[in-house]
Image (cartoon, rainbow, N blue to C red; front, side):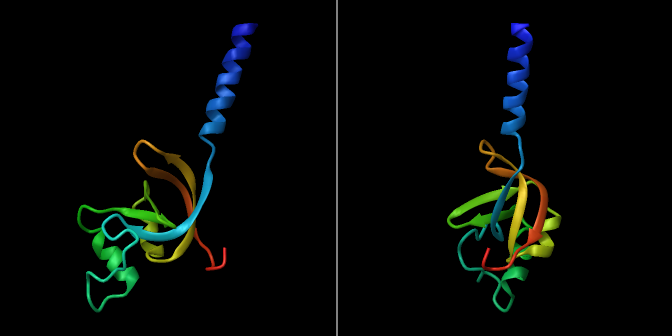
Length: 109
């Protein structure tokens, strides 16, 4: 019985650790990150983000000074340079949010 109790406790702990969380920030890319998107003159910020991810760089979430890569590299394109709420689980080892969903939010949230 003690073994079963420990096993269940372990399962509950692992389940809680993998629970999805919400992160709010701006969709950016790993090249520019928090810097202004000025590499492509004459383009908007959202166009610059989309152009930057065509190379070796990926979509990321900028939350203050923290930049976290996003596992989903298709959905963020529609939110490039916009404020969003990303729901998912964070993997500190790879600095990546495993994305469950992304939705636009207003600037005051």
